[in-house]
Image (cartoon, rainbow, N blue to C red; front, side):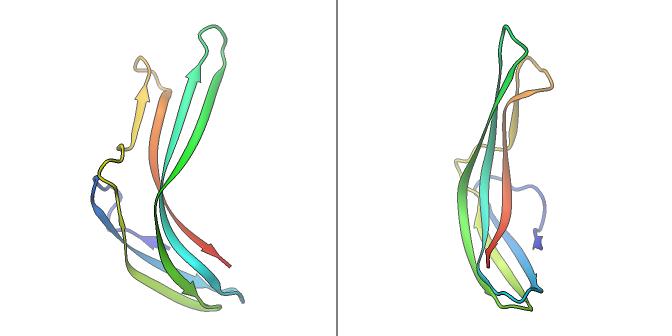
Length: 116
């Protein structure tokens, strides 16, 4: 479980998260990390046909290694600090002619990853 102080952050701000891992398995987790990535979706519409093309892109911004979690143990990683870059584009949806479909959509994802 990843706990954040709030849900919205500004550019250049350091985000302090608390990560709680309850490993109930018989295998230990070797590499636990917190990763911040930017997801971008581009959509193009054809003028003459009713065809939409979408391209999805994911860009890793920062990876913070946390460490190991032993088998059948609960581990709390307090004060995991991850910084939002100054020059990152803010979360946005660029709409064409004020319509409902976004031609460019940018959003950010904070993930917890672990390798057994």
